[in-house]
Image: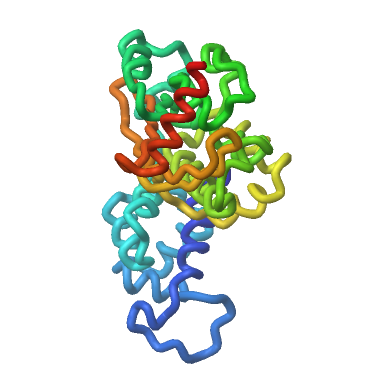
Amino acid sequence: MNANLGSYLRQMRERVQPEQRGLPAGGARRVPGLRREEVAALAGVSQTYYTRLEQSITAHASPQVLLSIARALELSNDEQDYLLKIGSPERPGQLRPAQDGQLAPSTRMLLASLDGVAAAVLNYRCDIVGWNPLFHSLLAPHLDFALTDDPELRPNIIKLNFLDEHVRSLYADWRTESESNVAYLRFISGGHRHDRRLAELIGELIIHSDEFGALWPRQDVANCVEGTKLFHHPAVGELDLMYQSAQLPDGNILKVYHAEPDSPHEASLRLLRVDWRS
């Protein structure tokens, strides 16, 4: 899945300009960004050791060293978390197994009770394990509602966003949406480096989407848990919705879209709810 510590360190090092870290920008530089010896000095490690990490001669480092390097490269919190994941050995049993079964009865009741918002339950790969009718009507009314009950047929949100024209056309700013999706998938991949199905998903997207193939090597990382999205829905028009994600006890993720109260977008969301009820 290209979750390689050396390549990630190189890409992040080339992103940082010397003047950002109080270093002189002059002198011949063969590549953009910081030199290896500069990162090593800023992180308080030897140049030889840091070079071994970048060249993947040494595959892992202690959390203390990785945190020092993260500070030297001015990584965001999400980028730091990703670095810690790919720079540490992945121990068997360390991670919760993939949630590929049916929804727990309590989770199914929770989804059914969320009547005024569009809600879905995703596993960490972004397969849709379950959705309420409003989420289905918002995102993919052209798909069979019961698809989420079959682990082999479940829609995957990221795959839909890149390969399904109905879903792509919903987003007012699809480019930003696509970049967010790839950054989130990269973030997730760091903690699931040996997941066969996740690797197959990434491979399929690289093969079938030129846009994904161009974005994936950038190694952008972000854990997208809240924000806003503007939809152009064919049934109700413009929908400016807020979204939030929350971890469930079974390891799955609850994702909810909602509108600002008493806004035209809330009215449009109510119309969409009426549409699936009629």
